[in-house]
Length: 620
Figure 1 (tube, rainbow, N blue to C red):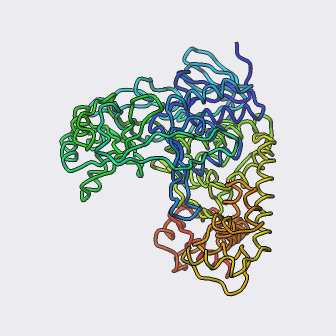
Figure 2 (cartoon, one colour):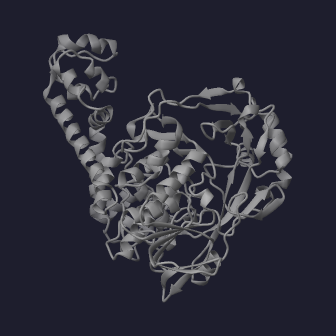
Figure 3 (cartoon, rainbow, N blue to C red):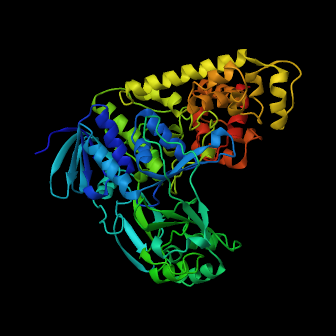
C-alpha cells in the first residue's frame, strides 16, 4: 500500500510542515502523517508570526528556502517592525495573521509540493532495530517504512487539558492526545519530562467596545518577511490595547483555590516569559494592572484573541473577570482559556543536526524538544527536515553556528544547555546580534540554502545583485564629497554640526542624525544615482556605514572564538584558582567539566565575561 519513504514526518504543525516541505523540495520522497488533515499548520495560540528575535528567525527560514515567511506574507492582516527606535540589530518584524488563511495556505503549499504524500492517522510507535529507526506504526495497525523519521508531535504526547478543576486528555481542545510514542522512547532509554503551556479565551468581536481601548495600527509602509516577490500588504486591520484592573484581579483571585496551577494538579513548568494571567497577578502583586492586546483572528471573522489573558481558571471565573476589563463589559465568550500539559524530551539527547544520539535517523523538532512558539518550532522543523534528507541520501550534515544565525543559537542552546522550562528565543541569547540582523539574513544564509539544494537559483542571483549594488553605493559614497555651501543649510535643519571643508558623504552618514534619505534630497547627479536603487539596498548600505565599527568588532570576536573553539581544558583544571570567575560560572564549570573553551562558553550560567576570564587564564 505504501512505498518506502526517504523521510516520514509525524505531526503537521509548524515544525512538521517546514520539515516536510524542506525534505521534499530537496528531492526526498516524504510522507506527512497527521491526526487531522483539517488542522495542518493550525495556529493553536495567538494568530501572529514574528516578534522580537522571532521575526529574525522567520527571515532566516525564508533565506534558507523555507516557507514560513512566504505564507506569513500571503496571509497577514497587519505588519509592524518592532523596536524601530533602537538600532537595526534590534529591529524585529511581526505580523498579525489570518488564522484560517494561514493554515489553508500551508496546506495548499504542501499539496502543490511534489514528493509530499499525506496520511491521516495517529503514529502509535516507531519501528526500531539495532539502534536505528526504520519507520512507524499507526493506530490502524499499519507499518510504514522510512529511511528517516522526524517527530514533531507538539503538545499531543499524552496531552492533558486543564480548565479549573476539570481535566481531560487532548492535544488541543476538541482533539485527542497521542499515546504510545513516549512510552516506547522511554523503554529505548530516553529521558522525558512534562511541560505546560496555555491559551486565553476567545471572544466575539461584535460584543466589544473599541472606543474604550487604544488603537494599535500597523506600519504606514508595511514591510514583509520574505525576500521573494510576495504581494505587498495594501490594507491592514488594527489591533487594540486595554488593561486589567484591581476589580479584575479580585475576581480572578476567587478562583485561585480551583486553579490547577496553584493546586499542584499541573506538574509541568510553563513558559517564564508568557505567564498566565493568574500567575502574573500572583508573581507581580504590586502591579495594579496588566496589558491586554485585543487581536483580530482574520480579515472576515469576528473571533478575537485576548492576548495577555492566558488562563486555566474555571470558565465562570474567566467570564466574570473578562467583563470587568474596559471595553469587555458586554463580551461574549466563544470558548474559555485552558492550560495543557504534555511530554517533552530534554534536547541534550540530540546532536546539533536534531538527530537523536540513541536512535540513528530519528529526529525531534518543535515542542517535543522543550521549546515554545511557532517560529522556534518552524526553524527546528526546517533543520530536521534538511538533515533527515541528508541522512536518507548519505550526504553531509547541515549545521548552523551561533555566529551564523539565530537558528544556530537556538539549536546550540537546546543541545548544549538543555531546558527545564519552555524555551523562547530572545535577541539577548545571541552574542553576535549586530551580525545576525533581520535585514541581512539573505546575505548570511541564502548561499548556504542554495548549496544544499533548497534555496532556488533565482534567490541566490537576487542576493548577489543586492550585495553588488550595496558595494556600488558604498564606493560612490566614499568618493563623492559634499561641499559646505551645498549641505550646511540642511545640516543645520537636521540639528547636527556644519562642515568647514568638503567631506565624503560616507563620513557624514556615520552621524546618527543623518539618514540616506537626507542625502537623496541633495541637488545633483548623486541624488539621481541613489534613486536607481530600491529601499532594501539603500537600507543595507546605511546600516553597513553606521554600524561599521560594531560589525567589525563582532567579526573579530567570531574569528577569535572560532580559533579558540577547540582549545582544550585539562580534565582536573582547578576553577577555584580563577578568582575573577562569577560564583555561578565557577559552580557550573566545576559540575559539567567542559572539555573545551567552546563547550564552556555554551553552558547555561557561564557568562561571556567568565569565558573571557578563562580565555586569558588559559592563555597564560
